[in-house]
Length: 188
Image (cartoon, rainbow, N blue to C red; front, top):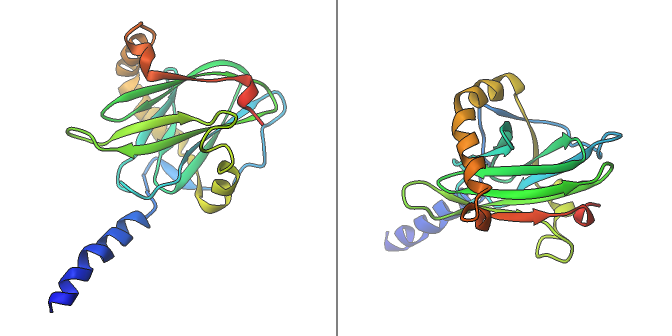
């Protein structure tokens, strides 16, 4: 009996780490092949299964674009130029991006321990960084998901004022330390 009790925590850990997240706001979809003409494509990837029940809000300035779910990724088509991508959990993180049309960019999200809720890491994949050589494999290993636009629009309407406050904070000297760069040269 004691041997079985020793195994139970390991079985639970394996189940938790191996689980993909889910949400009423996102659905599985067929992966996108690449950016549309005149557009840039940004992949938001969460390779870990840790914290599978926790989803992070992802915004392009004050427009909610999706939720980051465990063992999943979503692709976001947008115009070239400057964007402020924001990840919201217990903490708030930003990526200030300058995107080029015809290129794909990658941002990794990770779960971190928080005080009351989970915190997140929001990591732009730049040339030579830790994830640079991993993102192509992630596209085949992870679930491709897409937002349910109508559902996200309702959520966005409720949270837009709060997100505008977060944007204002991230644009201050104090908030800028929570914003990382992603440049045109980081696209593929």
